Each structure stands twice: as structure tokens, then as C-alpha cells.
Image (cartoon, rainbow, N blue to C red; front, top):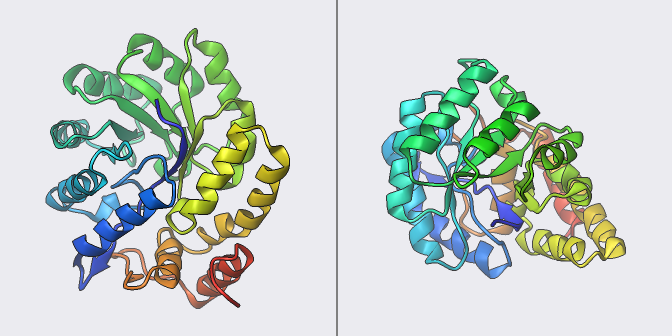
Length: 295
């Protein structure tokens, strides 16, 4: 089961193409700094602007470079059920531990449609599923009753959820609705601490791209019930959590990576644009506050 600080990895580009050497270095650094798992091709990884060939190559490289040191939860979501199944099948063959599957975006399926979508994936793909609920991006919310119904229906296939709904009551709602332990991961860095207090196991984090050691230490403090240390680390990280979304993501996190990782280009793909000057200023100030760069 997953736990700890799990970065949703940014995908580096160089001259418009996937920068494989820099990505391999990022994977190694993340593991060396204490990250407990890796998520390639999530929202932060710009999966929405990767071709299927690029998408699969990023997953493949991540798994290859991780070399079994930490689990890889491959981003497999799509607004097309068949394409999500394609990603799931590839990720399974490549050696992923699970597939992160976002609620289909744009289509706006009903709760019945969500159950049909995830049921198809559970029944036709061998890779375990981590549900990903982020209604601020997808519009469609995977409601509590839907999560509980899916997990009860496929307890061995739907094994976790990344909850980026921003509603902390859901941690208890999911726990109360299920008779067995279910892995809940925060999808909001700024809510990681209260999410953990409610029963969460960790976070699939944007901030951990830039501050992997601090995020890993933060999780360790939570796990040890060292609330004083957890609060201190949370205070160091908190401005960075917000700075990561001071412009359209992942522009700010890529800029932040360019500040802490030599050779990491801050470029994103259209329709996104690089972090604005105001965003860069917010990121720089947050990096200084966290002690990651000098003023």
C-alpha cells in the first residue's frame, strides 16, 4: 500500500521534446531525497499535452530509472475510457505498481457513468487503480457514495484515492463507508497535515518536486506523531504550496525546478505558458522561506 511523500513529477522539455536525461536525473534525485513513490504523467506532468507515444515513454523511463527502488503510480487517466485502458495496459506491461485514473474530464459523466468507466477499467485491465478526484479541473466530482460503491465492488482492484476535492470531511466519509482499510492520499499540499490527522496516508504532491527532502521529513514527523515538528515543517513549506499555483500549473513548479536543479528548463507546452514575473517572484520568495535558495 502507498504512503508518504509521492511527487507528481513534472515532465521536462527541451526544444519542445521530452528531455529524457533531465527526467532520469529528476527521478534519481527524488528517490535519493526520500520520496516514497513517483507519479509520472499526472496533471503536473502535462499528460494532457503529451502524445500517447510520449506519454508511454515518460512512464517507461520513470519505471526504468526507479529500478524498483520505489513504486511508480503511472498516470493513466483520460476522458476516453478506451484510451485510459490503453494507458493502463501499457503501464502494467512496463512494470507500474498502479495506475492513477482521473475522473473523465470535459465529458461530464454522471455518477452512473463514472461507475461504468471505472468498472470497465477494473474488469479489463490488470493494473490496480488509484482513483483521482480533482473536480476543480474535471468539473465532475467522484462523490463519496460512488467511491464507496466502486471500492466495495472491486476491493482488490481499486486500492487508493488521490483526493484533491479540498473537502476534508471525505476522509472520514470514505473510512466510515468501507469495512476495510482504504489508502487515502491528499491531492492538496496545503491540506496534507489535516488530511493526515483525519486518516490519510500521505500525499501525491506538487511541492515535493521542488522540496522532496522537506516533504519526506514532514511525512515522517506526521507518522511519528511529532506534531510540533510537523507544524514547523508545514510552516516552512506552506508559502511554497501556494506559490506552486500562483500561475497556471505546472508553470510555477517548472520555474521552481529550474531554480533548484541545474539544467532543468522551465518550459511548458501550449496552451500553457511559462510562469509570469509575478509568479516567479512568489516562487522565489517561497523558496527562500523554505531555505531552498538564498535570498
